[in-house]
Length: 91
Image (cartoon, helix red, strand yellow):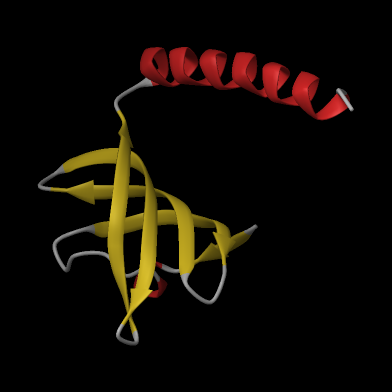
């Protein structure tokens, strides 16, 4: 994972990136987790950009509203990962 400076992420000019980590990046897709500030409030979001016409354009953004929401999301993803792993083990 890459920790990049705030100017390296293609976000709106009003978004001040405090920290960001690239999760994956290919020739057409880029995903990252950002800690950012907007209008005086800090937030965490998962961004997904797509390369279109030579520029990175935001395709999706998922804001993590707080620890409670994150724990719920993480729990469900962990359950689904267990199911996914079971299906991969079956011939």
